[in-house]
Length: 313
Image (cartoon, rainbow, N blue to C red; front, side):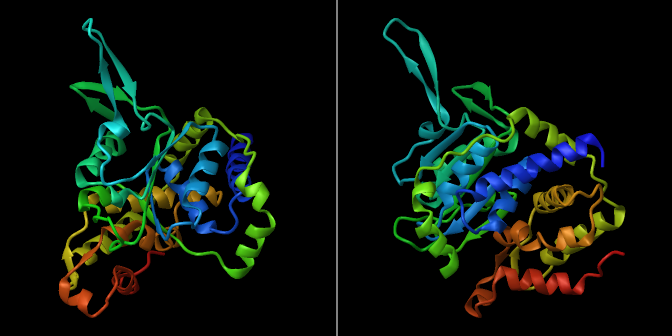
C-alpha cells in the first residue's frame, strides 16, 4: 500500500468514525453519504420525522470540514429563499445576497413540502454546480452535495417530486426507526448527541483530491455492459411505465467506482454494482397503475431483472 493509499484510507475511516460518535446506527446511510460525496452526486433520504436525517447531514458536513447550511421546506418557500437575491438600494446600487445553497453541504429538509417551482430551483445547482440569478451566473464551491429529505408522499402538505428532480439524486436512502438496542444507546448518550463536538477530520481540498482518485478506478467493459443490460431490461419491463434515463447508468457506474475505492480496490467487481441497484434505481422507476394496484414495488422489479441478467466473470 502506497503512502497516498494509506492517507486516503485514513481519511475515509476517520469521516465514518467521527459521524458514528454522534449518529448511532444507520451505517447504510453513512456509506451512501460517502459514496455520493466521492462520486460528486447528491443523496435523497426518505423517512419519518425524527429519524436523525438532519443530525447525520450536519455531522457529515462538520466531519469533512465543509460549510453546512440547512433549509426547512415549506409550501410558501420561494426559489430566492434557497438561491439568494439582489438587494437594490435607492441610490441604484445592488448587492448580491447569497442564499444557503452557497455551501459545501446543503440539507433541504422535507423537500416534498415545497412547491414544484421551489424544487426546480435546485436543478441547475445539482447538475452544473452553479446558479443563475437575474442573468448572472454564480459558481458554487467544491465539493458540493445536496442532501434532501422527504417524508413519505401522502402526508399533509406534501407534493411528489418530479421525475426530473428525483433523477438528479444519485442515490436514495431510507431512514428507518432505530432498533431497540440503538434507541437504548441514544437515550444513554443523549447529552453527547444533542451537544456534539464534531471535529473536522479532513478538508474540502482533500475531498476534491479523493474525488479525482476515484476516477482512476478501473471499470472493465464487462461491468459497463452489465450495467447497460440492467438499465435496458428495466426500460422494456412490462410493468414499468416510463424508461429510466441515462443518468441512472451513470449513477450506478460512479457509485460502484466509489464503493470499490472505499473497499481499497482499484477495480470494480459485479458485487459493487449489485449492492447499489436499489439505492441508485428505485426512486427513478415509475411503475404502471396496474402494477401499483397489485402492490408491486420498484424494488421487486429491480430484483427480478437483476436475477435474469448474467453476472460478468
